[in-house]
Length: 171
Image 1 (cartoon, one colour):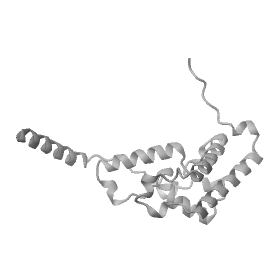
Image 2: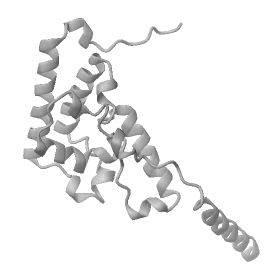
Image 3: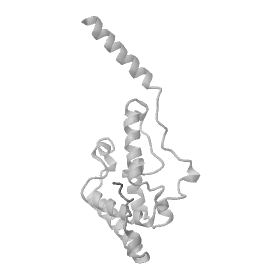
Image 4: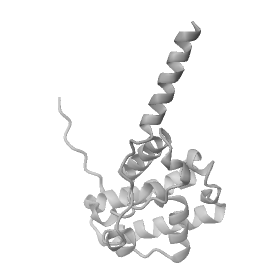
């Protein structure tokens, strides 16, 4: 029994060592490409709002993640990469102006809702990144900013263009 346990532990150790050499691609863009489709190219982003977005959102919701030291350890790197991929799928501030106007409008509403309901930033992120926890004033600043952009979009575009179009369902 001891021999089997020792073999299993050795195999586990070997596996852990081997996976240290397998890393996902980093989410880091070249500085020249960072602002091409960024939300700030189309909409005003006050300095205070920009600072909040950088501190609390951009690691998972942009094309440029600031990686902590523990991101070099597997399987943590895979877990972090999964969060980044998921986050960018939901909203990517670096690609925001590439979205259809209806999606932009909808994503701003989601920002407002998730910030108000303390769904963002994720608790798993703020456990380690304490400076990413939003204060009441920061939440108000973000939600007011997102609401103002939504209002400007609503004033500029016809109502039917602000509706998220769903692909037809297959039967």
